[in-house]
Length: 166
Length: 462
Image (cartoon, rainbow over all chains, first blue to last red; front, side, top):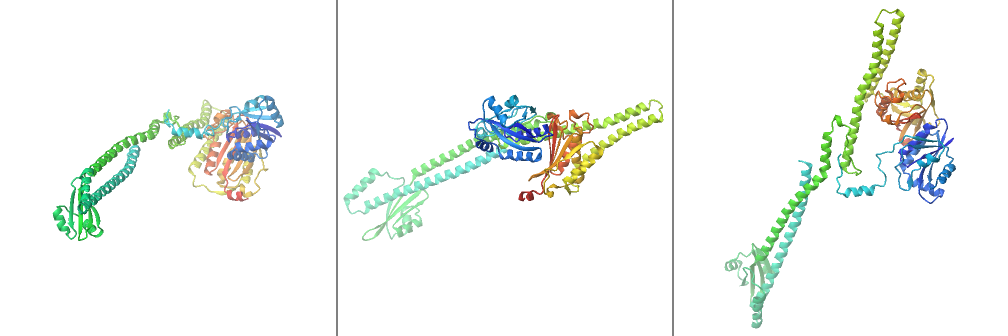
């Protein structure tokens, strides 16, 4: 059994990296740690899992359970974790505490984070994790970044032309 | 009528009628108020007239007269009449030379005070009781000031109303134009899109307004049009290419064979070569026909319940016959416990072809490495998941895989026509299902055939 670290931005699209992991390790069963960076000083484990359940939305969990079902005998477990450290040593410790043996990271950056406390840990993984494979990944351009309601409300009132045709 | 004019028109009518109502109410109340006020004035004068005429005290009579002269101006056409109560209306009318209304007269007799208005003239009357007899005091006057005031007000209101209509018309036009401007631009832009610039798109904004939605709708349509255009042009291209290859081979072989006299063995060899190529052509044309059939026969399909596990076993058996080295593994671990969930409704032959294509591709493009097939179900769908360790599909080519005859650059050396996935895609569409292909170049591919779960309710209650 291999433990594989996969960065996530809690978008549905980012879950396809799990499929990449399934393809990369055809012979053995895998355990997946989905992780994202999160700026906070709280390190308690129970608050962490609570935070995760707040950040991730229903669609994310639905798709995650679908993928788990589709590759049931292959994926033995999926953990969602937050990396809250700040130093390189902290990240190494994070890798060790999760027993990470492999990692899959996207070639492009993850961008669809649900809030600005989250940060991308791809670079950290690239530098410190053993056996990193980077794979092709394109984030959903269609789904707009969340929390843009205020902005669009402002747009509604602005005198700017709503549609400018190139 | 253009929408712009229509909007302006409706806007103007609505606001103008609202204004008309408001202005009418204002005018109506002004008239009421003015009339009441004038009656009040007239009543006071009637009382004063009574005092001055019938008061016994001569001194106070003088004072009243004085007061009247000094402080109360004479109203226009003011006349004062005093009659004995027994005077009939006809005589009063004759004497005053004024057409006093009948109602006024009867009110005056019955109620001792009455007021009325006839034409421009206002009447106010009082019944005075003396010891000996009763008298009627009638005062009449014209409210010229009031009429002037009211007519001023009327002119002002009418002028304001007309002015407002003009302002509304201009404003309405301006806003209608502003609101519809993007629409005009969309129309212009869409009009300019031809086959040659089908790649152009309307610009949309983040706003979820109707115009933005319209623009995205147009863009979606253009996307589909462009794809189908591409598919069609590529189809003819690729089809003629694929058809030409065997023909060229046949022509080449026969041409060389006909150059000179050959031995029977040589002829046999050439004929065999021709046969191979002809068989290839036959297979190609057969698959073309099948493809065309699925396109046309959407309604005439025989639909039966199909058990997917049996189907998979049968397809695997077929592939075993053709390609004994295949390494297709059926993973029974996650099979649903309830056998009903393995049943879908569909055309057996077509689904067989679809699954056969997927499994054949999986082993063909992975050099007979392990291929895992499994069935999973959830509340909304029944899925067949096929995972292989094959060559995969390059990321930039994955969007083309459903085009007939399209073949990815990395599989040119593997035999095939580029028909499998388009056909499977079409078959899945026919069964209101979908096919999902996830692939990583040089690592492997996951193909998921998704059928709608008809036993939804059942599986939820379970």
